[in-house]
Structure formats: C-alpha cells, structure tokens
Length: 135
Image 1 (cartoon, rainbow, N blue to C red):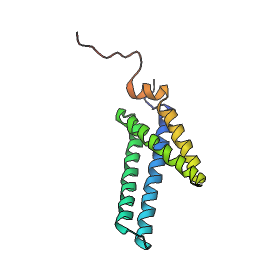
Image 2 (spheres, rainbow, N blue to C red):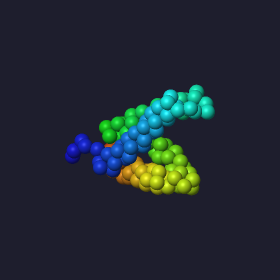
Image 3 (cartoon, rainbow, N blue to C red):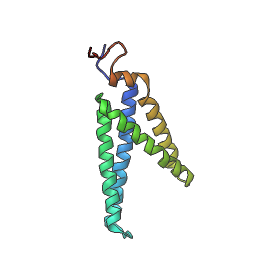
Image 4 (cartoon, rainbow, N blue to C red):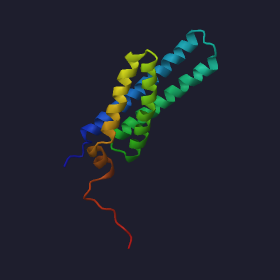
C-alpha cells in the first residue's frame, strides 16, 4: 500500500490553496490600492488587507496540512469552504456572477472531496484498525 495521499485529498488541498491564494492576492491588491489611492478610511482598508493576507496564509497552511495528511487540517478546511459559500452566493446575487459561480464550484467540490471516504480513511485510519480500549 502506498503512502501517497488519495486524489480526493490532494484535490481538497489544491482547492484550499486556490482560496488561500485568492485571499492573499485580494489582500495585497487592497493594500496597494490603499497606499496609492485615496481611500475613505486608510486604517480600515489596511486592516482589511492585513486580515485577508493573514487569513490567506492560514488557508495555505491548511492546504499544506491536507496535502501531508495532517488530521488537524480537515476541520479548518471544511470551515473555510462553509464560510466561502455564503460569500459566493452573495457575489452571485450582487451581479458579480463571474466571481460567484466559480467560488460556489470550488466550495462544493472541496466539501465533497473533504467528506469522501478515501479522505476519512487517509486522515483517521482504516476501519480495520481498532483503538485499544482500557479494561
């Protein structure tokens, strides 16, 4: 048996990384636009940019955790996708469907991959393994 992660886990890791890169990119874009433009509130704009960059970096760490079969990484990845879906739907409803529909697809595909049987077995062990129970 190979030690490679299942394809569904690698798919989930790749989709999590895409969302993380989008967040980092959006944060950097916001920071640059804040510094070269004329925002209404510079402090708030820079704070939003910083949060997006930090959040995106955290998502990239979660993606790395998924790719290396770290148990802890599944829950934050699921939460990322659950938070992504309402944002994507609001983008669709606000005539930004060019962003909303792809994000809905990413969120749904990632959730399906994260809840697939191969991912569960890769992260939490096989059904044949039983935990030792104290007598």
